[in-house]
Amino acid sequence: MADAKVIPFDDDRSRGSAVQRPSRRRGAGSRRKGMEPGLVREVQPLPTRGPLHDDVPVTREERLPRRPRDDGGLERRIAGGLAFLRRRLTGDYEVDDFGYDAELTDQVLMSLLRPVYDKYFRVEVKGVENIPSKGGALVVANHSGTLPLDGLMMQVAVHDHHPADRHLRLLAADLVFVLPVVNELARKLGHTLACAEDAERLLAQGELVGVMPEGFKGLGKPFGERYKLQRFGRGGFVSTALRQGTPIVPCSIVGAEEIYPMIGNAKTLARLLGFPYFPVTPTFPWLGPLGAVPLPTKWTIQFGEPIPTDGYPPEAAEDPMLMFNLTDQVREQIQHTLYKLLVQRRSVFF
Image 1 (tube, one colour):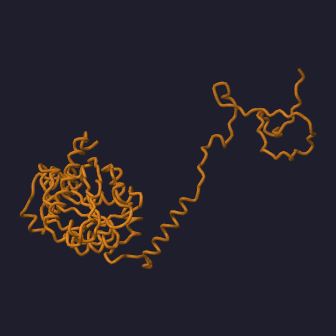
Image 2 (image 1 turned 90 degrees about the horizontal axis):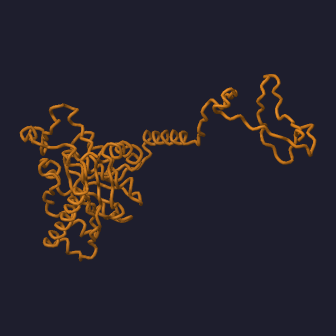
Image 3 (image 1 turned 30 degrees about the horizontal axis):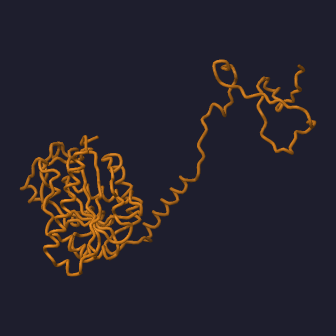
C-alpha cells in the first residue's frame, strides 16, 4: 500500500525535534497558504507519557500545573469588605431601637461564631422547619453549660439553617448588660433585656424571640444534675406569647452540659464579684486561662413542634391556671426530647 502524502503542520527544523505539534483548529473555510484542496492530511497523535515513551520531551506547559480560572470572587470579596469598612467609618448603617446591627451580625459576628459551631462543637440541628417562616414566635430552650454558649449556638443554628433566613433575638439577663464589651456585643447581636415589655415589642414586630426560662438556675447547676430541667420561673414567657398570639417553639439542647463540668461553687467569691455563682471545674481555676477553654463536646439542637396560642381569648394571659398548664406542657416537651436525644447519643465527644 502506498504511503499517504503527509503535509507537516509545523516546521520545527530549527530545534531538530522529530515531535510535531498540532496547529490550532481552524474553521471549515480556512486553509493554509499553498495547500491544495483534496489532499489527505494525516495528523500524527500527541506522544503519550508512559514506560514506552519516557524519552519523549515534555513541553513547559505540560510540566506546570494548570491554574484555576479566577472568576472574580476574590475581587468581589475585597470590594465588599472595603465597602463594609467605608460604611462603618462613615456611620452609613442601620441599628434598630434595641441596638441590633444586622450588617455587623451577618458579616462579622456570625463569621466569628460559625467555626466554633461547625468545627468545635459540630452542632447537629433537627426540626428547624418547625420555626415559622414569618411572623412572631417564641423559642423556649433549656439552659446549661456554666457560660451561656448555648444561646449563641442556637442563634447560629437558626441563622444558618432556617430556610427563611430568620434571625433569633435572645432575651438576656441583667448581668449581660452591665459587663463591659459583652454589653455592646450582645446589643449588636440583637439581644435585649429579659423583660415582658421588650419581648412583646419584638413579637409585635414579627421577630423571632428566644428565651431560656431556667436562667442562672439552669446555667449554674451542678454537673450531677445535668439535663434535669429547673423551674421555669412563673410562666412570664407564656403570658407574653398569649398576649401576642404567637406560637411557642420548644427547643432542646444536648452537649452544652459537659463543656464546663461544674463540680463546685465558690459562693463567697461569687458574692464578692457580684456573680450569681463562681464555677469550679476539673480545669478551672486550676489551669488558669487554659482552664476556661470549653471541652469540645458534640452538640445536638432540636426544635420541637410549635404550640399555638392564637386560639385563646385576650383575657387568657391573666389566667394563672392556663399559664401554669402551658408552662408545664412546654417544660415536659423539652425534658422528654432531652431524654430521647440522650438515649440516641453514643458519646459525649463523638
